[in-house]
Length: 558
Image 1: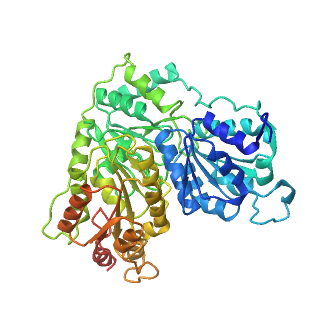
Image 2 (image 1 turned 180 degrees about the vertical axis):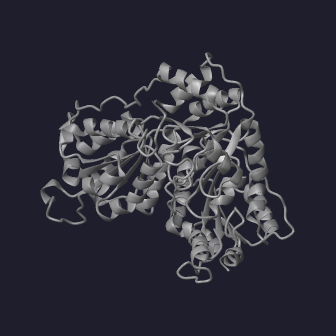
Image 3 (image 1 turned 135 degrees about the horizontal axis):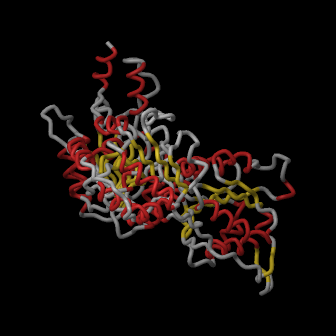
């Protein structure tokens, strides 16, 4: 190759550098070896080698959630892409920017069902904002910039680009340069709509705001809290968006989702004005579209979202504002021409949340009391600790008793994907090496992606991993006991020694089965660095943070 020529792969890496990419997550494949070779010379991009493509995709998804720029993953065709699809689905449902590059079969092999061939546009089309293939190396700058632009615009989400193996090896002129960095389009707030909003608030008797979601950032957090506090407006966070507002806010009303405060549920149901900002009002946040209902008779709905296609998609909307949530929040905080008399409801809702979210010791507590352990963890670790979890009832104790003080500080899939916590925690520890990061996983959840502890060890990161082991798929067991009491089928687990497993990856590790044992282990772990794992063995009877137990569900059935 001459000085005035470059490979398509080299051009691709230059385009990534221009877009501000400084880290990619990958499981290497021969279909994109040319990219790996180009990364060898790209000193500004850290290539994190993962152990399974699902883990790599989760890491990219989490990285996008933290930076608000697309997280980037590279995987190979067929098996690699299908493994990675879970991360694409989570990025879509969670509204997080991500770009997945997939090494593809050579162009002359296409449509012959070549080795590991898939039609990636057809496969990823339903779960991505855009899925395409780059056949012409001269169009790499166009495709890459479009991918980043699509991923961050409107409702953020994932983009998938397939890269034919032979295309990556083609040579193009070195004067074929990357396009400038893609930026999120400005979405100014309509003054007339703001005037209408404040008139609706002035007429309301019991309003509530539900916040968090597409494009939410530190600016939106600060300005919306300032606005809501000035009028006493109660703020609830959407499912797994608890870091959208500081928990110290005097008008924070708590989180919606699975197992919320019953008083908060009643407050949403009885509100005469619901103001959704950034939230899609999905199934988990609204308890199966029951609060509010899609037609919400007797309630007014104001929906602020950066994607106009989201407004009115499911819910009848009385006032819709297609705007960036941070621009809206700033405009609301600075708006002066209104006649709103401050509500008492914000302070009242905050007191109700604090009562519900505070641990009260019980003489009948389990040997290892999850509420007590989470409270002890909260008291022991810095306020800006980043907590990462996958899916399972174990997460409910953190949703209820943890305080997400920093931003970002909660990485948890609203899509409810198991196996997310450990990969997300690795991404967080790499992105914020100065902050404490905790991965929280159930026993079933951990074994979905626990192999990524090898990635954590290889990267030499500081990470605390908590594995909550009740010997069951606890969430499914809870529903099973509710619908088919005492008929336990396929939900019991025979688990490994998780402490020994952690040690095999080089972690300091310990098993505990009492609350005091956990406190002692936590104190020990705090004095260490590197990879640390605490295996928490709990009784399956302790099903959820709401107080559900196996025996209680069976008694209800009788």
